[in-house]
Each structure stands twice: as structure tokens, then as C-alpha cells.
Image (cartoon, rainbow, N blue to C red; front, side):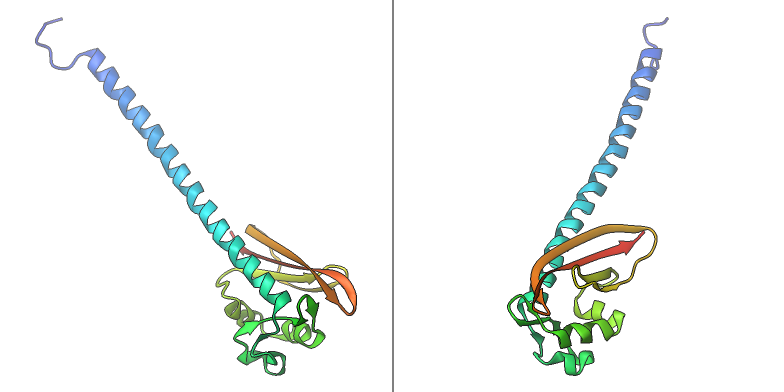
Amino acid sequence: MKKAQIFSMDFLMAVFIFIAVFGVLLISWGGILDNIVKHNERKDLEIHVNTITEFFVSSGGNPYNWQDNPANVKTIGFARTDRVIDNGKLAAFMAADYDMLRDRMLIGGYNFCLKLVNAGVERCDFGDGEDLVVFSGRAVIYNGKADTLEFRIWRYT
């Protein structure tokens, strides 16, 4: 080999290794960023779902008599008193337009399921390919009996 040779086999090998390591790091970094975004989205949704569920069981909604005209509801609540579910409010929720309810709960493109476990009362929209399911539950009194109100939201992949 000549001493003044610009490109040597060692240099080419070093460049190849550098590019390979850099490529692996780029791919890994993209995956890490994606995981961070998904984690933050999930945490935000958990806070939102817990807030909605708590409002369901602790408030009568806004306006308080929203069940008389569900289309004018600003905030949905089921409570006659704290943790005691009003049958009329729950019946109005079950009969209301699904998209209107999603709009009032500020859940956008997410789907929801509301269930009173022991009573067997349920309003759900299930499908295939569910992703990012977020769940919240609260102990309530429904028809004079202890029950659990479960609320979950998700999106389809």
C-alpha cells in the first residue's frame, strides 16, 4: 500500500460501522418517541375518563333536569345525590343519540361503554380492533342496591 492512499479498507469499514450504528439508533429513537407519545396519550385519557366517571356519579348534570331534554345537556350526570343513580337520568342517557353523548363527554373519536354491573344495564359500541382501552369504575347505589358503574373508552385501530 502507498502511504498517501486516501481511502483505505479500514476507513471504509469504519464508515460502514458508523452508518449501521447510526441507523440502528435512528430506528430505536423513533420507537422510543412513539412509546412516549402513546404513554402520554394514555395518561391524558385516564385522567379524562376518571373525571367523567366521577362527574357521572357525583353530579346531576348541567342543567340538573337534562333528562327532560337530552339534546340540551351541557354536562352529563346521573346522581340524584352523591353516588345514588337517578333512574330517569340513566334512562335518558341510554336512549340518547350516541354521537351527541360522545360530543358532550368531549371524547371526540373515541367510543364508549357505560355499564351498571349488577343491574345488567349497558350502553356499548363494541367492534373489532379495539386499541387504547381506558377504564374507570365507581361504587354506586342503583334502585336501592349496591352496584358498580363502569365506564370505558377506546378507539379502533
